[in-house]
Image 1 (cartoon, helix red, strand yellow):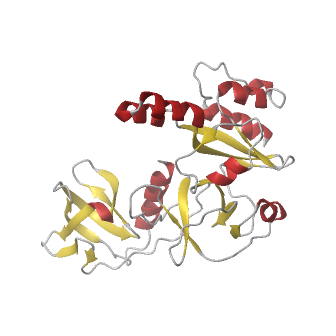
Image 2: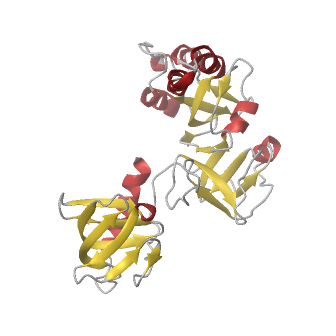
Image 3: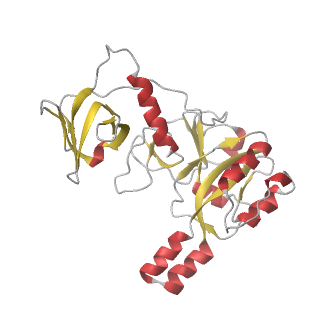
Length: 294
């Protein structure tokens, strides 16, 4: 969500650039692949996304090109149709400070934990972030919290520890599971080859969040209940859990549940202890406490 708002903010900044740079469609109609139509004003194509003012709602709106069948201007000239741009050149948006946390790790791929600790990338090859879902993973044009990384030959990165990309640091989920504290047992992920971005950090910890589940409980749901109901139950056990890279102890600590988080934060910051009204900790409160102890 935050990345989407950031994308719109960047476009709004671009809309205010010199009026001489009118590389947009003033008015027209968008037809989606589900046959829904939308009237627009001042439409831009940026990367694999389309941004415009929705005339019906009077709001700035963003669509994926993959969801669009056709774009026509007010004179019924076809600008874009079923994957092919007819005449509108791609707009290059100036880079804007995204305000997200950027740790000081050299750009590149960190194959091992030892490379990461030494802050020496194993490789500085160019990488590309892509979305987690769909057969054809969409190339991401904004900084997302979770993604896959591919090399320029379109091979997915597997079995690496971390990647530093455009100043942002990402841990591979499997690396978190392989290098976790010995008490953090039974954690699993459906996106083990995916990466999650470090949200904040300091001299003591680097903090992120990952969708993890209790492997034992999830296995019981699949095997014990079975069928559609079992699958739904298993997926409901996936939670965005707080994860810290403990710089001193050189390991990850996963906040498996609220009580586990309290055991971690109690000696560091007693004011950060939660009441645990739910099974999982409140991540907004976790972030506030980690900000005090990073």
